[in-house]
Length: 302
Image (cartoon, rainbow, N blue to C red; front, side, top):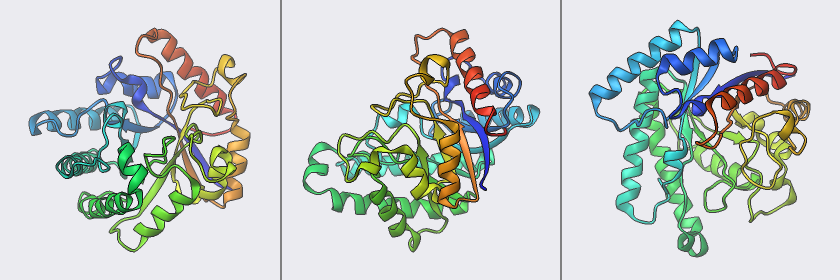
């Protein structure tokens, strides 16, 4: 049986509780969790050195003070808005490589084991006419980033499968192929961060690509970190696990654990990634987070 732990991506804190001691207190005291994944929506890794130095110190102090474990850093909504390593313009691909290089260095300074997230989005033209050539370049850039990550002390990079076909990988086969290409070219392992709400792409190869449990059965051993959200399987919802959404949602903790066990994975870290609209009331956000943790705690220890 796999060893599974529950944690949270602190994207919930963006613009609401931006100071490290604020979100750290919520994670520790309000949610009763220890494991946290840090969202780069709370700190731009390309901020100038004095800013980075100050914030790294504050984050490390808050993590230590509240007894948290900062496992990894991750792209947020801001970075997701960009094509990053898939941009058709080579100048902007180079700029994205610089962004990721700095994200890696900040992750190392924070004492994280990994960083990653959204890696690349192809343009419509590139995906339609030369997707394999563009994907090969993306893979080469990620392989180069592993050298930087190794020097920064990271143990792995995390590549998140996405629900948009232009944002590889979006199918189970594509995910396997990408990892296979990277195996012999990487200085540290590149692994997945499966999101249970991302199995909803409009272009897919097999029905299993639309089944979040099939993703787990096939790839959980290669996805040490996973994002957990409630969804109806029709879009990338990032709903909380409250009674309202559990009635229409397809994600069930018992089925998640069963699929992970069937995969043969020895361990898995489940990070709640619940994203409310910015106009949602702060007290509602916090209450939904608490209910979500309570829901999962019946199945997974913190």
